[in-house]
Image (cartoon, rainbow, N blue to C red; front, top):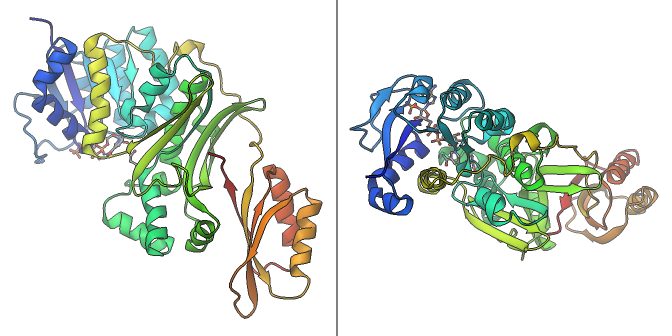
Length: 428
Ligand code: NAP
Ligand code: HSE
């Protein structure tokens, strides 16, 4: 009888329960696919008495996840508690020091401490795997680390926070303002305990930082991400963008440029008829571009019990099979510091200007834009109120610094009734 792979699972919430269900219900399939039994030995959570809708019989209980991580009778410590520091980090460190492999879904911890954990793992001859941490059920970490390992990755792009995509598509579908849909998402339980992680773009930024590290052989550098959330996106902009053939997405983009590594997580306009433009609800999409392969589009559930547990299991199965991959696709000590690009690549922008409806206002706008080197591709003036007129502009490609100079110049013209809105248009 082959030796079983023995798991200790810390965290019995949505994802932990999903993993337990798969291990219990698919024991035969797992053994057939890995050549050995996969067994849960012990578990940990805060509340021992909570009914979790799944039997924990046969598993030892540990109140302290660090104690679980150090147990002699486990091979893999499965961290599913969450939190960038605290018990999650302490227990993963303890597991590696005790010679255990680690599987985690914790993007916050890895985005901030992934480099040190990966170095710890390698120093101890262990692995840290994290398929579930990025885009839930979509096997994007595997795609980058394994399937596309023969490519120079030219761009990584995607919608990696389902809650934000739900909010944006629901706003458009129902014509509702941000605040109302935010409350609705909250009542449906979509938002993280700290909603800023979702709507502030932080959660998606964590995921992008992890993918960028694998794609470009750089140390994870969350701090270098240019980060903007969806809080300022109005229903007016969503509707105007739709009129002009675009949809607004919280889009992550990582690309290596001559100016350094560009990492952005921000609202962008994408063509409505593109795969990204057609992405509805809480679904995620990651687009990977490689010099040899061209473009790959991956789409699927970015969260939830089944999809996330499916991704956790893929890491556990790798370990059971003896497939031992480095955390970020190459030895952690060989990852280069990420040299952050100081400016983003030029792009077209969508501008919404609320102008005082008086003679010469538009002339002043085009003169300021022209002087700043911002060239207009398309312009539209829609419905008027008594005093102001909304003017929509799509620019040709322009640098963000030239655009900012133009926006600041517009502020001095006295023709703007409110602050201008500028949103990047991404070529997809
Ligand atoms: P969750 O439902 O909130 O569950 C967290 C679990 O961790 C609970 O069982 C909790 O115990 C336990 N826990 C928290 N602090 C603990 C501590 N100090 N000691 C011991 N146990 C502790 O979280 P989740 O949604 O399953 O997420 C788990 C991880 O997966 C997070 O890193 C999350 O970012 C990541 N993730 C989640 C999803 C998703 O769809 N949910 C998708 C991708 C990634 P009690 O139950 O006793 O309170
Ligand atoms: N809050 C995250 C989302 C959960 O909405 O995508 C999955 O990481």
